[in-house]
Image (cartoon, rainbow, N blue to C red; front, side):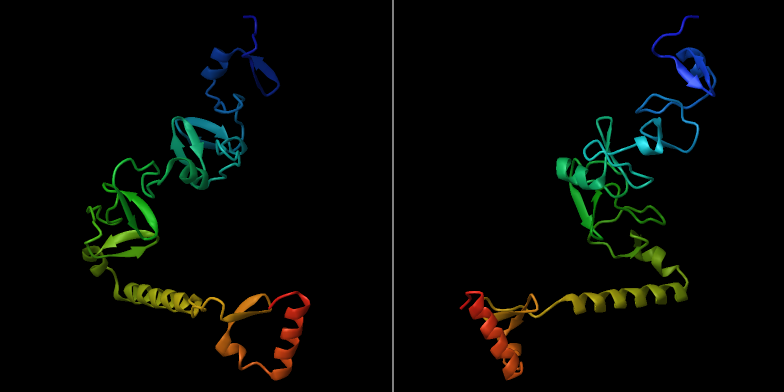
Length: 208
C-alpha cells in the first residue's frame, strides 16, 4: 500500500497508520508520533512526558497535578486564574456551591471523610490527615500513638504561625532600619549614635 503523510516510523521502518495502530504502539496525543519510552496516560490519550503540557504556559506537568476543561489540560495556577475554583478531590471546576476547608476548595459531594467516605459539612468535626479530612468517628479508631503525633504536629504548626505574626505598626510612627520598619517605641531604645547616623542618612536621602 502506498504511504501517505500519515505514515508512522517504528524502529527504522515506515507503516501506514492503520497497520501501525494494529501493532499496539502508543501514539502521542500532541505530536502524533510513537511513544517508545516513558509516557503519560491522561484525558483518554497517551503522551510523551515532555509533550503533556499546560495549554496556557506550555510547561510540562512532569507527573504533577493538572486540571481539565473542554479537552485541554492546565496547571492549577492558570486554571484558577482562567476559570475559578478547582475541587481538590475530583480535579474539576466547581460549578455549584464551594466548600472551603483545609485551605482548599471542594465540591459539596466530594468533601467527605477520606477513610469511610461519609459526606461532611463544615458543621461536622473532622481532622486533617495527609491534606485530607478524616471524620471524628474514624479518627477515634486510630492508634493512640498516631493521634499523639498528630496533636504534636498541630501544636508545632500553631507555634510557628504565632512566631510569624508581628505586632502591627502604626502608620507614620516608624522608621526604616535595614530596609525594615521599626516602631517608634523600639527606635527610642536604639543607641544615640545609631539614631544620629540614621537621621543623617534620612536627611541625605531627602527624607523628613
